[in-house]
Length: 122
Length: 438
Image 1 (cartoon, each protein chain N blue to C red):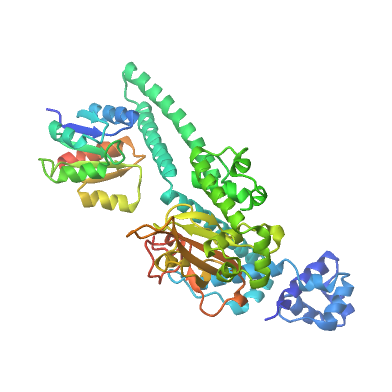
Image 2 (image 1 turned 180 degrees about the vertical axis):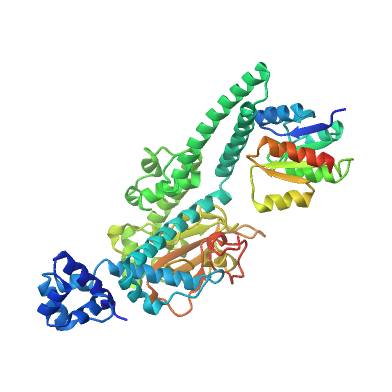
C-alpha cells in the first residue's frame, strides 16, 4: 500500500508540481493550502510524512508545527518544513519546534523526493 | 612626514611629459642625476629654491608639483587606515604602517589608487547596505515581495524540471505544466519589476511605491522643511493641493502642517531670528526669550530656510513608545525609517525626565564620525487629566559641530544596532552587520 504524504502549501503551482513528482514516485499525495485548520487536517488524514510550508494564510507553519508536537498523535510524525527564508534563525526555530528536515525555497524536485524518502525510512 | 614626498613623482611625470631626460633636467637644475633620481622616486625631499628652479625648467607652477589629486588620495588612504584601526575584531595581519603612508602613495601610486578606489567603494556600499538592511529588516512590503518571488521561482524550477526530464508525461499534464510555467514566468516578471521599482526608491524616496512615512519624508524634504505660504497666513490645503500623496500620507502630512501653522503663529520667523541673534540656538534660552516651549522652538529652528543664514538644524521626534514621528536627518547621520533607533539618543533619555531640557554632545559611530550638539526634551501631549499620567512626546534638535567645538567626552551614539560598529554598548539589542557577529 502506498505511503501517504500530506503537503500543506498555499502556492497552487508548487502544490501541483510537488504532487506530480511524489505521485509518480509512488506516494499517495494529499494537499491542503490553509494554515487555519491545518493541524486538524493533519490529525484526521494521518499521513506518513508531512511537508509543511512556513508562510501560510491563517496560521504560521511554525505555530502548526508546535501544535502538532504538543500531542494528538502527531508528536513523532516526520515533518519537512519549507520556507522562503534561509536565515539560520529560521532553521533554528524549525529545529527547536521539532521539524525533522528544513528546506529553503527554491529547492529542486530531487531534493524534495530524497528528503521525503529519507524521512519515511528513518 | 610632509606631503612633499609625492612631489618627486610629479616632477618625474612632468619631466617625461616635457620629453626631457633625467640627466638633462639635473644638469640644468645644477644637481646630480643620481640626486634627481632619488627625488623623483620620493626618497629625498624637495623644496625651496630647488623646487622653484625645477618648476621653472619644466614650465609649471610650483604648486602643481606640490599639490594635486594626491591630497585626496592621501586623505582616503588615511581614512582606510583609521577604519582598520577602528575594526575591533577580525582584522587579520599587522596594522597599516601609517607613518609610511605618503611614501607608499609616492612609490606605488597605482596600488595606492587601487586601495583608495576600494575604500570609496566600501564607503558607498556600506551606505547602501545600511539603507537596504533597514528596509529588509523592517519593511513588510519588501519581505512579502521577496517571499512572493521565491515562491514563484520555486514553482518555475519545479515545473521546468519536470518538463525537462526525458520521461514521458501525459499530454494533459504536459499542457497543464506549460500553462503553469507561462503563468509563473509572467508573475515573476511582474513581481521582479515591481521590486526593482521599489528598491530604486532607496535613492528616490519620492516614488509612489514608498511607505507613507517615506512619502512624508520626501514631501518635507522637497520643501526643505520650510513652507513660506504657512509663514504668511496660508493654509495646509494651499500647500498640499498639487501633491499626489496617498491617503495615509496626506493624513500624516496634514498633522505636520497643522502643527507648523500653530508654531508659525506662536513664533513668527522674524521673532525667532531676532531671538536667535540675541541668545543663539540653545533651545532653552530661546524658549525663555520667546515664551514658547522648547519643543516648539526646536521645530521652528528645523523649519528655518537656508536663506535665513542661521545654520542648519536636524530634528527627530518620537512618541511615548519611542517610535520616530519626525525625521529631519543630517546627511551624515541618517535617522532610521523603520524599526528602532539607537537607545542612547538623548531623545529617548528625555522620555524619563519630562520637561527637562537635556544637552549632550554626540559623536556618531561611523566611518567618518560626525559631531553634533543635541538638545532634547519630552513634553506632555494634550490637556491634563485627573489621576491620569500624561502621554509624552520627545523632540531632539541636532546642531552640526566640528571636532574642535566638541569636548573630550561626547556620547558615542549610532543610528540603530544593526548598523552600529560599537560592540561595547549596554544598549545593544541585536548584533551588528558591520562587526562580523551577525
